[in-house]
Image (cartoon, rainbow, N blue to C red; front, side, top):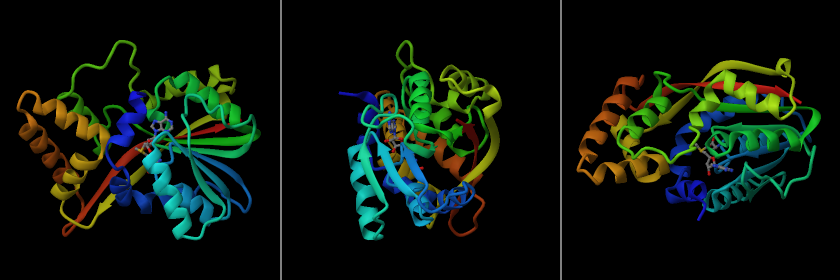
Length: 268
Ligand SMILES: C[S@@+](CC[C@H](N)C(=O)[O-])C[C@H]1O[C@@H](n2cnc3c(N)ncnc32)[C@H](O)[C@@H]1O
């Protein structure tokens, strides 16, 4: 079994994605989407960014390793009547079902960063992009003080050490690593640019309920709780996450937590 696929099929990321819809839509509005643009949304989940891309008139293919999320994306596209949006299974490390130079825009928001073999991922994203096209990635930043980097940092303290050769997904938030990966894939350094941007997690209930959603439905957090349970430390992990979510919440009557990420733009 592919461990990367198993991790994302374990929970139900649609539950977390619900809290990210507004930021996804706001980000897509900045991407200069025009009618008929050929877009690949990679590591698309259930379409937080793929849906607004299609609503702006692009022809969108969402590719994700998790079959449950592909099914959820196709159900959303159908419910919304979006005939220019479809989802299929695929692995960012090897997009063999996709031909060379097919897409004007490849978008991967907190998606491809979670695939192993980052050099293969960069090579595949470049290969399927048309000359003159663009790649836009959203990547969480290691050791950033905001929400997601801190969730992953706290969780890793309760988890067994990763296997030899494991490359942390968070390295996609390090500019030098990103440059190394894309230049190795043939992109000139001048074609790679970076901006800090913000995603806000919005949830109608209190922060502790959003923690519960992560605990029950977000694969990496589910694994951290399972690891913590092996030595009776679930309560400590729960308390650390509750403190984090409460400290970062900016809403008085619900949950609204901004998180900083690195937006990477690559010109092919
Ligand atoms: C944090 S979620 C983000 C989903 C979506 N981009 C969004 O913004 O809601 C990470 C996604 O990457 C997908 N993913 C992880 N590894 C992948 C791989 N090797 N190839 C394709 N998708 C992958 C997961 O299944 C999951 O849907």
